[in-house]
Amino acid sequence: MPVDLKALLDPRTTALLMMECQEGIIGGGGKLGALGEAVVRHGTVGQIARVLAAARAAKVPAFHCTMARRPDGGGAVVNCLLLGATKKSSGPGLLPGSAQWKPVAELAPAANDYVLTRYHGISPFHGTELDQLLRNLGVRTVVAAGVSVNVGVLAMTIEAVNAGYQVVIPREAVTGTPDEYVDAVLQHTLRLLATIAPVGEVVEAWR
Image (cartoon, rainbow, N blue to C red; front, side, top):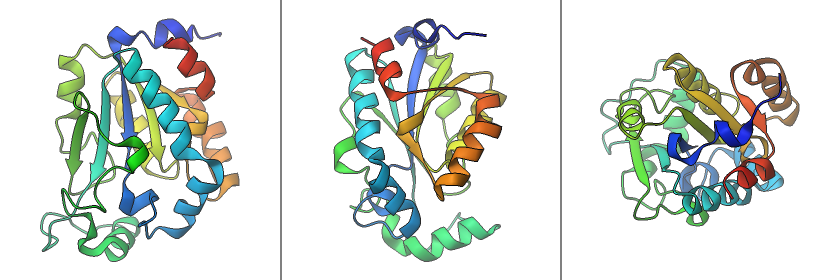
């Protein structure tokens, strides 16, 4: 069934969620090698920046969903391989306010943006005020951008659907690794949960 993207992305009821677009994850200081390489290869940051600029122009609230670590690692339980690898690679680098923790320069938060930080888990809906803030803003549709399709974007999408939101994924504004796996997840999983649209169409819907 054809989707009315302009209606789905009504600025009055839509928010942009950017998942872990941080210097220490996808920027020059990032230590998640294959993912960082995929971001550069696909020009993902530039595509997210296009979506972010359009969102701001349309007065769509933008949320920077970040991950952080305490210096002593407190509160972050390593209960799966991914969190163990992330803790080892990031070390104390993702301290709140540090250069590694901050969103990459091209996506730097503006005064009206929201910045939410979690210390544990793989979804920005877990243990943060994200859901409450979205509901208080009257949001019904979330636009999911960032990394990675492997886990973070997938988790964010599932949690958003569980919470009753519609989800739109701007295709070029998300990535993961390897490329063929990302394509498979988008085709066989995320397509069943979200509306996947080219970045150009999302930007046009907000003009």
